[in-house]
Length: 605
Image 1 (tube, one colour):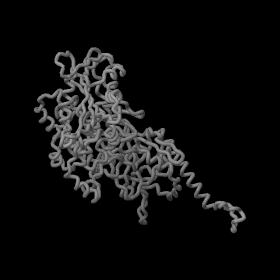
Image 2 (cartoon, helix red, strand yellow; image 1 turned 90 degrees about the vertical axis):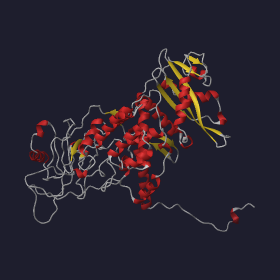
Image 3 (cartoon, one colour; image 1 turned 120 degrees about the horizontal axis):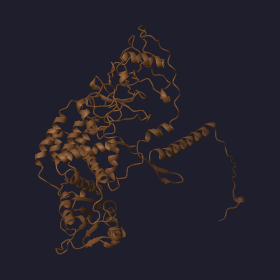
Image 4 (tube, one colour; image 1 turned 90 degrees about the horizontal axis):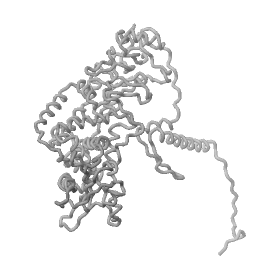
């Protein structure tokens, strides 16, 4: 039935009502916030190696590297109202009466050059006061001291901590004012309860004051349940085979070396870590990139008990203390640095995991995390240090095997992963790659080998003579630029050159490593262990060599300065070990090997 206008008995009039000022303000606020976050994301794309993942009509998705959350937060927060200026304080030694609180200030050192280091501290502070026209103050807690065994004098030091006492007559310092120093840096008066400590410093340990980690009771109870659980990755052992010799006599040397280091006092232990390169020898202010920090030491070592009082300090940001562990593998650890060094030792020796738990007093969860970092170090070292295999008129053996699982009755077999092995038998160097098997629905022979053999273009010289068996596609290698090919069955005794050595390695050494755990490991984790095996074949055939080289390779990664911390970078490597990590990031900068920290030469008293 069609309804006409005459059939409608009710007619209503309507009109569009204008938005109220409050509604307009709300819409404007939302629009401004949207534009602010959009502009902040665009600027972060260029400064933090970001990339746009999705751009639709309603939603946009981005991926970033490094620490960008604070930048986005600062860009979108409304500007703070200027603080009311404090009433001017007296210029003498301070007013004694009345119970008025004196302003809390900081004391700075202008320079640590040799000429000024011979000038008494009080005189230097007085000169600084004359330059800045500052309010007198005194700091009686921090000290900046030279680390014995650490060399280096250049750079401008600074130290600042809150003082719990009033100003002493005759000793003046720089007042913290609203106006900044060079470059317009703003410094604010710290709260009276501000206390520098390891847990409050940037990149410090997260161990509580009672010597335990800073986790609450719920986390502790959860981890207690996991302590008895053995993860599959903790029972996999990458045993080298190509260059193995009887080096049992060197184990006592390693034990003595580690024992001597663990017996050092906290400040000497920190100095040893810096000298070995396991801690950064150079730090820069996060807010003022051109300002280098200086290594100071507190006379009261209880503030930083695990470093013997050492901490990085700056003049531009006096309330910002940077831990010596910042940017290292020890950053944010819930255990002392000596504990992590013990784990590195046991990883090098491939100690039974139950003994590690009992001797080091840590749970399986933490051991699993540290061992994952060490395998990531192996991945980086293999990608960045291993040279191309083969060369002109040199033979390189290439082989492929399939690793899988079988049901208990033996009726069902499933391929878990395919492993590519490339061996330079003359140099006894090998490279391994875990490849995802082609599904049954897409069993294209050519496509399968294009995927499996893809790493050869980065691993092997094109002039090498490639030895393969009948299971490897010869035409795929031709299309990749390898013209010198020798194809024969691995069991052919009449052939002069075969790939029998690499096939023997793939059939004996690799499956033994993943016995009983293959079905429980992801392909990424399998690749981590293959990289560890390659690393141990070249850099760690015995415990002493493994410990020395893994600490050296950790030090090399610690010296790298990128937008992310070392532990963040190691997590990325462990998540995607298949990426070509020989390509260094665009913002990469490496601290020279022999760099010694710039430090304060005289204590602040």
